[in-house]
Structure formats: C-alpha cells, structure tokens
Amino acid sequence: MHDPTPKYALWIPAWFELDQPIAVGLRDRFWFFKNPPENCPAADDNEFVFFNQLLSDDNCEVRVATILSIEHPVLGQLHRIETDGLDYVIVRADETEILVNAEEEPGVTCEPGLAFSDWTVRVMLTDVSEPVADFV
Image 1 (tube, rainbow, N blue to C red):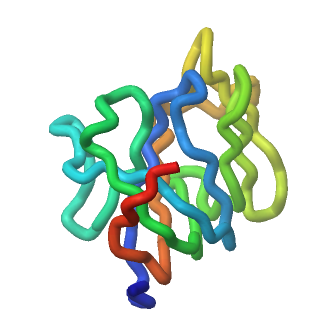
Image 2 (image 1 turned 180 degrees about the vertical axis):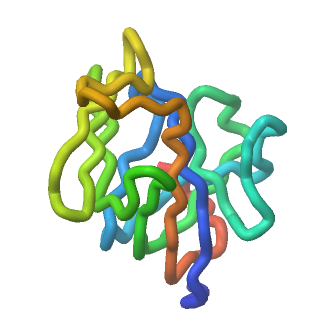
C-alpha cells in the first residue's frame, strides 16, 4: 500500500560515494534510517532521513517513493544530486551545476563565494510505500 500524502525526508551527505542519488520525479526504492542517528538534525516535520552507508546497515529500511521536490536552504530548489565519483554534482532547478568535492575536501565547491558547511536538503516524497522486504 502506498500513501499519497506528501512526506518529508532529510538527505544529509556523508560524502565519499556513500549517499543515494536523488532527482525530482524519480520513483525508486530508497533507503531510510529506521531510527535517525542521535546527531541527526531531523525536525519533527521530517518523517524520514535518507540512509547513508557511513553507519550500520541494520538500522535501514527500504521504501518505494516518488520525489516531488528537493530544496536546500541556501541554494533553493534543486533538480537532482548525483553522487558518483570524486565530486558530487548538485543540479539546480534551472539546470546549472555545482561541483562539490566528496573525497579530499568533502563539501567544498570550486565556485567562488559559495561556501557553507551544511549540505542537508529537504526532500518532499509522495506515494511512499510501507517498508519492503527485498533490500536488493
């Protein structure tokens, strides 16, 4: 059963290719923490936190969902976040790209004047399933 009510999730990068890629309009299986880590800045209005491979996988559940929007507090609306390779690619709603180092200096961009430490984004999901048993 899928719940059509919009839900919110936080995507908090761990860098080093440990994070799930996300994109507006994508319907897929996503990994979420069953119980968010203690140091997670999740607010009460965020139902989920995207899982990353930095922590134990026994605190993980998989759900099918569709991404409606991705928003960063400084960058605004985003179209997608690509997480393969030494740099993550943050694509804004207008399709401009920001390269963010994910290996040597995680979170550092090559864009002059664009420097902040919190890359957490808020993701609106819809049609979220109950946890699925098949993790593959």
